[in-house]
Image 1 (cartoon, rainbow, N blue to C red):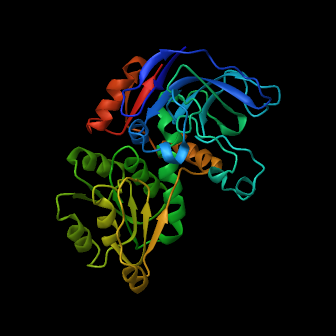
Image 2: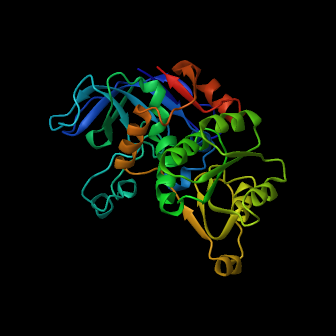
Length: 342
């Protein structure tokens, strides 16, 4: 089968011929990929930024946002059957450790992360995963239309879900970055809260899309955007800031947009947050980290997606054009999410 393989850091991945996976363990599931999301994390992987954290053995197949159809199942699989349409939680888990038992399965002590940790991911024709990762979908769902919800979607939803108790009527939420993750976050805020939503982005087209998806106000990131957010919030700042960028200075601007006793949610990454501890103590602002989400949160998100309350804006590429999709993403030429279709 064809697969997008990373052979070395700071090198372009190549489309190689590799053996098809097979179900060998009792809970194994092989999925025929119908759509694989192209994520900014894939760019970070290629640059070697995940090497220290994951220590993957190269080469391996990248791709951690995957949906498709069940092709083969192990002997003990009962939750899905051959032919079912599925979206895959990005981290197959054990179900037995403390984190899994506590409903925090994205922190599973035994989890793997296909596409990041050296385990083959889904930018391929087939992917080996676990029954515990499979969320069964309505058969009419097209995998290419929902694949990026497996990581970008669940990450955005997880952050919003955590912020929901803070966003009662009369509060304000700021979304920094209305791209691949942020445009999902705007929709989740509209679906789950009554908050006023302010979206900040330097791309006018992204802001136009955010307005169509439920943003109350949009602000161009032109150097005056922190003051603009302050003006829109009576000089106080937002109750919650959801930062889907968190690099190139956005992280410090995001904290500055957060009101006293407010919460700054970090979802994007790459920058360095520099905050005097006195500012944290004196204003009681919170900094909240976020990483993917739980299996149940992915299932909840798919309910919203199948109801039409959360939709992905995508640009599709054939699998053989993976290098072009990655280049377009890096150049900021993808509106929403890029999806590879084998």
